[in-house]
Structure formats: structure tokens, C-alpha cells
Amino acid sequence: MDHRNEHGDGRPRRADVRRRRADPPIGRGQGRGRVARERAASRRGFVATLALGGAACLAALAGGAVAPVTAPPRVEVLAPGAAPPVLAPAAAQVPTQRAAPPAPVLDQDFADPDVVRVGRVYHAYATNAHGRNIQHATSTDLVHWTVDGTDVLPEVGAWVTLDPPGHVWAPEVFDNGDGFTLHYTARDRAGGRQCIGVALADSPDGPFRPVGDGPLVCPTEQGGAIDASSYTENGARHLLWKSDGNCCQRDTWLHLQPVSWDGTRVTGDPVRLVRQDDPHNWEQGLVEAPTLVKRDGRYVLLFSAGDYRTDAYAAGWATSDTLTGPYVKGNGPFMTTASFAGAIGGPGGQDVVTGPRGQDRILFHGRGADGSRRVLYAADLGFADGRPIVRGSRTVYEAELARVHLASVREARKASADRAVGHIDEPDSFVEFRVFAASAGRHTMTVRYGNGSLDAGAPATASHGLTVNGRGAGVVDYPYTGWDEWRSREVPVDLRAGWNTLRLTKGERYAELDAVEVA
Image (cartoon, rainbow, N blue to C red; front, side, top):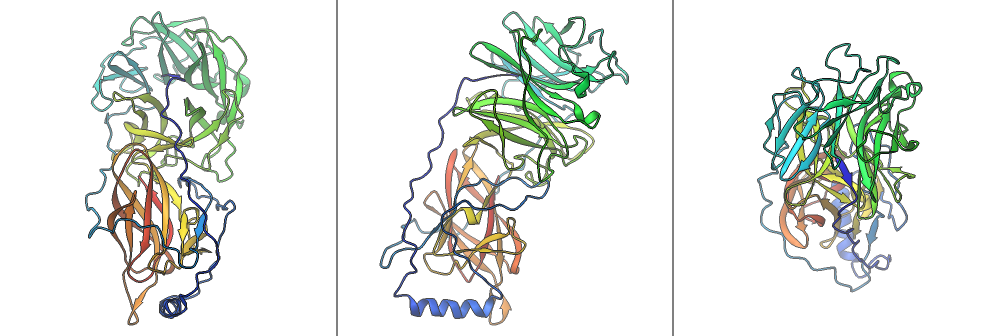
């Protein structure tokens, strides 16, 4: 798809929250003594640290974990006599109907999708399968697709060796003003490396015919070039591509290179944007499949990483204030097998397109019930201060980075970032999360909690009240886990598009919070 700098819906504004005096409240001695005695009977080994201001430190994420949204922690203690913020009372019950799990929109092998809109019709192209070099399907809503039974690239360039047959990959198609351009990846006969070629057609339906005597981009000394993608800005076209260094123990760089408007000639030298360098190793030694968009004045580079043949394949991002960088990577992937709760294996090969209602949509491949195929998925996409948020993919919000009121941040064994929020003991204690939704509607919130409460010496259920955007949304029950043992509780929540607040308040007995995830 030809990505343009053409629209955005404005950067969300951070809430203006006043910081209250961090002195302990007085006049509560009798009540707090009772709470302390009750908690001591059901709690062992609690050491609390009151965290004030400063940037919070995140522990290394395990491979496959989704990076949390980070923000400075806010721990509030009310001044003597001050009243806490008033919210609507919690409803009697949390809604029971959960968000539907993601499902394929095209349930056949359709890897490395590229999508271009022509009029009211979306044209999707994909890597070789079913005896076709390049696959093609059409839709008017990005959900219901009609598969073209023909090969839109029936012949490849003379520079290509099809050994083994059918090895044509990662198409990129765009409207060049006089017709349509297809960039494709295939193996160069001369150098033996995969390289990027060009074909042209009068129609998005093809057939595309190769042009040129050789590949467009083919840096043999870097391992070749794959995964073309197009970006235009200020009347200039740029080609993104990956140097395929993982073929031969070299770095894999994502490049940006100026090309002619029809994409048949390079017109300048490539600029290196990012390479594999993840300290937590979720990238597994390579980055690929670049997609570049500009949202809210910020360039956002999406990419995939890892071994596409496994469920460890995932998608990450990097941002920059200028087109050519420097780009700063996010603190982990935004789509993984785990973020989709195992419903989609190895998500990646993404493309971004504007949907029929003007909403950003992300199309990508993943493995569904049949793990032998990479099928096509589509989801709503939003950007939270540059971070991609995909509906259905869990985004982690650490409790210690939330707004913490009359509670404490502590070091916590086995917690996701080795920290958690405890001592949520007062009637007006709460932890408030600021979360982002790509689109409005029913979402699933997963609360990671610990509960060591006892009742007459027996394990007991604890609870928190839940409010969503200031309105009561029920009670979240937490079965017993023991202290410093963490489990998850899923709760359906109705969110608006953009930023939302989720507040968990003191309920029955005692529970601690590690994080919440929103999908």
C-alpha cells in the first residue's frame, strides 16, 4: 500500500491531575490500626515502598510479552480532612458478555498482505500460494473478501530464478497515476540472493508485467533485499525495504530510499532506519516487513520480527520526529501470540489502510486453528502517543505506573515488572489506569492480581469496585491465590475510542494489583 501523510485525529491530551501533599493522613489512627491488625492476620511478608514521582523502572519483558504503556507513577495521599474525588457508585454486577475473539477475515493461506484502495474497492495482495506467484482478493469493507482465481503476476522478471518454483514474496502495490506498480521479492539468478523487482499494470486486477533488465534493489553484499513498502510525502515517493542479512549472519536493516513516482527507478541512496538490537531478544535476531505512517505529527514505523514459521513471530514499532530518523523503538512488541491470548499465532507482515468509515485498520497474517496456514486478519488500529494499539491485542498497563491513591507501590516477587500496588485498604483507596482503545465498544480487561485474604483462617475471595470513565461498572471478584502469587481475572468493559480511565477501588477484604491488560 502507498502510505501517505494525509490525516490524523489529534494527539490525546494528558489529564491535568493535581498532585496532593504526600503527608500521611491524621485522625485515622483507630481505623488504620484495625485495618493493620486485620491485614496482618491474612498477610505475610509485606514490605511497602511509597513511590513518589520520578520515572518508574520496568524489568525486562519475557519474549512474547507485550510491552506496557509507560507513564510516570502517581501516588496520592489526601491532606487531612480533604475529601476524595466522588464517582458514581459501582453497579451491582460487571457485564458478563466478553469481547469476541479475533477471527480471520480470509481463512486461507494469505501471507504478507498488502492492501490498496481504488474507489470503493480494497485490493489485497499476498505471497505465493495455490499455484499463483502473487495472490489477489477484493473487498468493499475489509471483512468480506472475494478471491481472484488468476495469478496477477503470471510472469516474473528474467533476472529471477524460480528454484524452487513459486518463491515470490511480499507484494507491494500502489496507484502510480498512469496505472499500478507492483514491487515483489524473488531470488536473483546472478547473485543468488533475494531481491526486489518491479512490474506494471493498467488495472489493480492485473496482469502485472515485469519491467527492467534486473532487480530494482539488490544489495548482494548485505544479503539481498526483501519486503518492499511505499511511503509518499510532499510529492515524493520513498521505498522501504529490508536488507536480508539473516540469510548470512549479517545485520538486518530497514531502509528508506527515494524512488521515481512510478517506483521503477531509485533516485537516491538508502537511509538506514533501524536494525535488530532488542536486548530482550523478542526480535530473535532480525527485523523485517516495514510499514511507515505518520500520525499526530509523528512518524511511526511498524515492523515484524522473529521467525515467521513459528508462533514467536511478532510486530513492533519505532517512532521519529523526522522522516529519515533517528527512530526510537518502542519497549517491546505490540502484537504477539500471547497478546491475542493464543487465538492468533505469529501475527505480523502488517499493512495499514483507512477503512470505509475513516478509521485506521491494520491487516496482517497469523496462524489460526490450522497452524499450517498464515491467514488474513483485520482489526481497528489507534495510536496512543505514537504507540500502536490494535483492538483484540492485549496492551499491558502496569499498576505501579497508574494513579495510586491511599495505597502503596512495593517490590513484588513474581510480578510482571517486579513491582505491584498493595495496601489498597482504606474505604477511599483506589488505583486508576489510563488506557487507550482503538475504537469504541466492548473490550476485555484482564486484571492481574494477588489475594492472600483469610476469613476465620480459611482462604477467602476478595474484590474491588470498578468504575469506567467515572461511571460505576460493577465489582471484580478475586479468588484466593496467596500473597505474591499472581493470577488473572477477565472482565468485559465498554470503552470509548481514545483514552479512558479504569478505576479499581477498595472492596471486600484485600487484594493487590500487578497490572491490567486491555484487548
